[in-house]
Length: 186
Image (cartoon, rainbow, N blue to C red; front, side):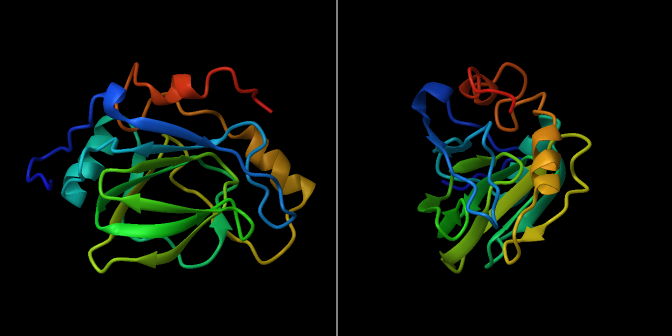
């Protein structure tokens, strides 16, 4: 259901399916050996107006918000965590690089991508709109196309990115950061 409210309302965490997605370094997409990507099915219920979604992300301290689609080529961000929140429509995304996993997403789904995680839009409905945001200090992110080998310098940059301090969907005390609990810092 699309909401005309000023800020999107997250679903109760107990109603959300959390799925950890682990990807290996394939030589061109380093992915993140310390942190999995997290797919949160239905985190925003059935979706919301894109401006309401960006307002929610911003209210939870995430910056550099945008509304659009995902680039149609494999890429990653070596210096930032990225949250992708599907406001409307549906799409097939390829996560983890060319050898990764195709993931179907729909309005209300949210994906947390740690630094280095490859992502690419394969196909999308005409009304597909996704909202992106970054933790404070990470909105000046770099986009690296996965068409050249990743080197150890890039891997070191990925490992040095600090973890987010707040959950982009539920804010302080939200369930996303504890989902990462128990994983190593790299």
